[in-house]
Amino acid sequence: MNIVESLKMAGQTLVANKLRSSLTMLGIIIGNASVIATIGVGQGAQRFVTEQVSSLGTNLLFILPGSPEAQSRPVYSPQTLVWEDAKAIAEQIPSVSKVAPQLNSSELVSYRNRNVSALIYGTTPELLSVRDFDVAQGRFINDLDVKRNQQIVAIGSEMAERLFGETNPIGEPIRIKNATFTVVGVMQPKGSTFGTNLDETVFVPVTTMANRIVGQTSPYGLTVTFINVSIEDESQMNAAKFQIENLLRLRHKITDEDDFTVRSQKDLQETTSAITGALTTLLAAVASISLLVGGIGIMNIMLVSVTERTQEIGLRKAVGASQTDILMQFTIEAVLLSVMGGFVGTGIGVSGILLISQFTTFQAGLSLTAIVLATGVSGGIGLVFGVLPARRAAKLDPIVALRTV
Image (cartoon, one colour):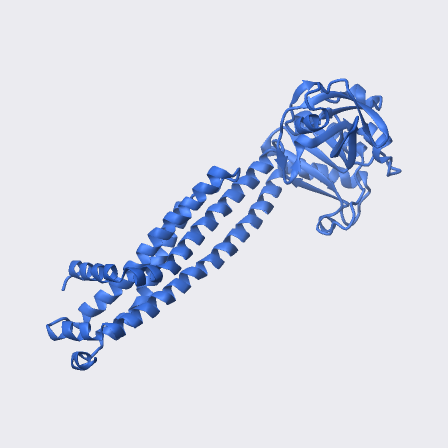
């Protein structure tokens, strides 16, 4: 018997037992759909992280207070960076384009009878270009505001809507921690970055922030939460990082462990991508267990099928079918179950990814490699788990098989 006839007979057998075949394929279907959907969502997560890091700005370095070890144990926020460090970096590092310190705090912002909790950024005019912010209405903080400790603010687009509704916010007074500030600008929508909604933030001059909202906290100058540094050229990132580290060590008189950490966008992207990649691999491995379970299910059903079809096998052997013919037929049946389950599961997995992309803001990705791999693995599982039942069927004695009732 050739392979075409074996395929035809295997197909007829599976069609004749539709319910059993469908239930047998269920494990493979669930496994394939889970693996493809998981990998697609994982790739979407990696793309999302990349977009989040890119939205911070271009060619950025972030200087954080505390050593790398302290960063991993955020019991309290170390206060080791001051505004003078930012000024020194801007003046003494030639590859630096702009430097923008930030002093952050979370406060209640009030306008008339409306109160909104907001993230307050004390900063300088350079933040506008360093972090790619744009002004939609009015203006941003300027150097004179910083020099004179002016009580002015620029607010995010959503903050403007929540506080003022249809009222033009420019020139209106708001209160932050019992101090009155005048709104001079409204920012263009920026969106969220790593869970922080930048459209609900309030920007004030860094000097005003220190003197009127959080207070001076260091005898060495105006303490800042971190420092944003924009580099002229991406090729100079490593050199700039090295020079900044050396400068801060000299300024802080460090002889042992650094009391600061310099990180680049690339560092952030590699770290977050490694985390999302590991999670995707873990979830895909868990989902692939369904494929193994599906393979075991195929083997069990095929073993039952051999028992049920003992007389059929004996009759076929009696009329001339060889062990190879019987082996081929049962193996093909197992592979067909796996492959068909793989295709159905692939369709469900791809549909799930498309639905996620269509009805949510999360853009899951279709991985051709994952589709081919999942389908190929499901076919291989059918081949592997179909061999034992097929060998048992092929070795049946035709005389004994024909006598079995």
